[in-house]
Each structure stands twice: as C-alpha cells, then as structure tokens.
Length: 327
Image (tube, rainbow, N blue to C red; front, top):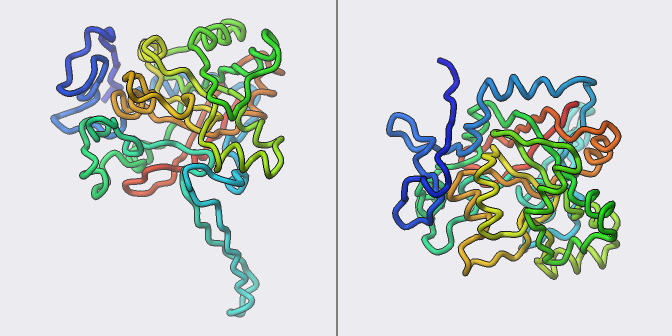
C-alpha cells in the first residue's frame, strides 16, 4: 500500500474534542477504529524518509546521546546511572566481562513517550488514555515507535545559542528560567538559511549541555538537583500555533524540558501538554548537540539524516534516544 499523505486542517478548523482545548488532534491518526499510539511519528512515511536520505553526502556521522553517566546530579529526584561490571573469571573458566546498568530512562538524553506527562487538569494522555489506564497498561509506550521501525527522517538543527551569541552577545544562563521566544527561533532559522518541512525532526540548541560540561561539581548540583529551573522555549499561544503550522514529527532540545521550566499551568499553554498530549509529538530532552553544532557551522548546513532507536521496552515511558546524525 502507498504511504498515507497527511493534510492538516488549520488550527482553528480542527474538530472540537470534548474537554480539550481547540487545537487538540485526537483521532487524526486513528485507522480502522483503532486508536493511534504513535502520534506525529506517523508523519515519517517512506516517502519522507526516502527524501531525507538525500541529506547524506559525505557519510560523516555524529551520535547525539549524552553519555549516560554525565548527568552528575539528575533532577526531579531521579536516580543517577549505576554500572556493575561482572568479571566472569571470578566464577567461571571464561575470561569475559558483562555489565549491568541501573538507569532512570529520563535522567539524561531521552525521549519522552506519549504516556510520560498528562494533561494536568484532566489527568489524560494522548488520545484519551487516562492516568489510571496508563499506570497499568502498555498503551502509548515507546515500543510503538520501535515496532514501527524506529524514528528515522530529516533532522534540523536550530542553533539558537550560536545565533544569540553572534547577534546579541553573552547568552542567558542555561539554569535560569529564560524563555526563548518563537520569533528568535524564526530569526535563527533565517540566519542559517534553513527551511523546515512537514515531518522534520526539529532540534533547538540552547546551551544546557554546554553549561553542564563546563560546570564544576558544586555548580552542577546547584543547577540541577537543588533547583529545577532551566532555559527553554517560551510557552504561549504564538509558540503553539507556530509549532502546529509546521507539523514536525518530533521536537528535541539540549535542555531539561525543551520548554522553559517550570511551566505555567494556569494559562493553558504548557508545551508538554500540547506536544505529548494534544498532538502526540515526542519530546527529546538533554541531547548533546555540541559536536553537531560545530559540524553544521563548518559545513554551512543545518539539516541531516537522522536515525533514532529507542529502547524496545513494552509500555516504555522514556528512553535514551540512540540517535545518530548522518551528513
């Protein structure tokens, strides 16, 4: 069967979903009366992936996962990585090694699944999954992306940090609640000469990973575990409408929560709610975009072929991305 082509109604013309704000797209990706659990990853059709493969010209590749042990003091009381190395020679005739990892899947580079964060007022997740159902079922888990073939398409880096420092000077602290307005995202893309397309995997570099890499132990503890405050995209109606109109398949940042954190829940524009819940758009957080930024600058291009293989865990709530940019 040929790929389905997706044509979206205007934001204000979307069918009303009971109990949800205008702009919710529940049901849009449903097929044969079966509720969708993949969300906007559906936009990564064979045609989109084939077109994205044209981004490969030199064969250079960069992995975008921050090393798992690098987040020294994970926020939100999340557990830091524990690695147990097992020497087979101590209990068997073999000279060999294993290791066992104990991780919180959202303590470092990660994908947020569609059952990670609910619409706080109603307690529902993407496509109407209730909190009670989410806690005892596999619905909306990361395995759905894996069974679809992983996340593959055209990646776009919006190097806001480089734009800001070249145009305005010293950038705001990554561990402040600095809100990046969508007008500056537009300005960065224009400055780069980058045009976005439906289905793109959009990445925003804001400086959090660079801050952490350069910070000492006391600064890291103060900026992460002790204070859950971080730079990110401004959450308001203009941002939501801008993101909707571009129809990205996924959104990624190098900061704690993609949007400026903590969010404001009382104004109705929390991006975690809009992306994960209302649209089923995966959020990537704390990706290491530093080497990617340098390579994009040197090449004078900010688009690339992207592959991501989340952990294949039934009902998974978060996952390291296993992401590689290929030029």
